Amino acid sequence: MYLKIHKTEENIVIAVCDENLIGKSFKEKNCKLEITERFFKGKRHGEKDVVEILKTVNNANIVGEKAIKAALKAGIIEEEGVMRIKGIPHAIYCRV
Image (cartoon, rainbow, N blue to C red; front, side, top):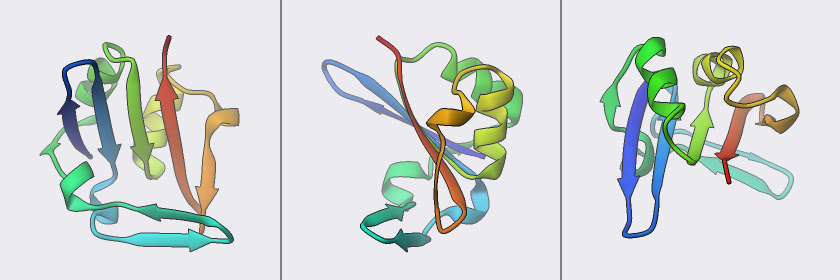
């Protein structure tokens, strides 16, 4: 999986996606999902590393079967929070 860290003065957002989705775009009804290199393509990480990093942040954008499965298994997100666009699972995680 790819994991990229986006830092601002006020926040950190983690972008995680399955490697095979980089550069692809999916549209269904009025929803569009673009998996751009600029936002998602960071360093490659295994499931264990991705889960450990996700546990430390308050905001994440997670896309793809492997990435979603890892986050679900670790209890970071719940199935009800996963949407699918053209069959591709996507979740936005926010912890307050």
